[in-house]
Every structure is written in structure tokens, then in C-alpha cells.
Length: 134
Image (cartoon, rainbow, N blue to C red; front, side):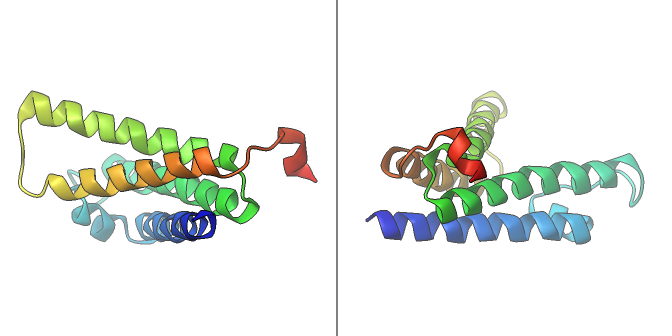
């Protein structure tokens, strides 16, 4: 069970890291996949998509990879909180503005990531922060 969970977290971390790279290299294409488009093809909108989504998915993916590799549950808290807040924001938006076409898919992906990361945080060992540097 622990090995399968660690492997799933590692694979999803790779997926998130792939998303980060796609937002960094092709922000227009990657943004369209999430229903995002800057007002113009250049400038602040494109920069925001490139920087913010690369940071979100990159940090989440790296923390998941590192946490799974080191079998360290504490490293999973960062992506767990990122995806839990994102899921809560989507739920609030759903309640406030109603459903839109395709709304279940991103919420399902985020809910799966939250569930896996929460399970990983509960099952994998917790380490002292000093142990991470050795």
C-alpha cells in the first residue's frame, strides 16, 4: 500500500511538473487547455500565465517528487495545501456563479490529488527538518 501510494504521488508529481514546463514554454497553448487566454498575445496577461502557473504546478510537482522520493510526508504539505485551497476556491465559485461546461474534470483531478496527498501525509513517515539536509 505504501509503495503504491508513493508511486502514485511520484507519477502525479511528474504530471504536475510537465504542466509547469508546458506553462513555461507554451503558455498560450497550456492556458487554453484550462480556459485561459490573455487579453493580448503579449504583455502582462501572458507573463502572469507563464509565471504563476509555472510556479504553482512546478512547486507542487517538485514537492511531490521530493516527498515521494525521500518518503517524507512533511514535504507533501505544500502541494496538499495548494490543491486544497484551489479545490475550495472552485467549490466557492461553483456555489457563487453556478456550473460551467467542463467544471467537474478540474475539480475531480484536484480532489484526487488532495486525497492522495492527504493519504500520503498520513501514511508516510514524518521527518525532522534537520534530517532533510543530510
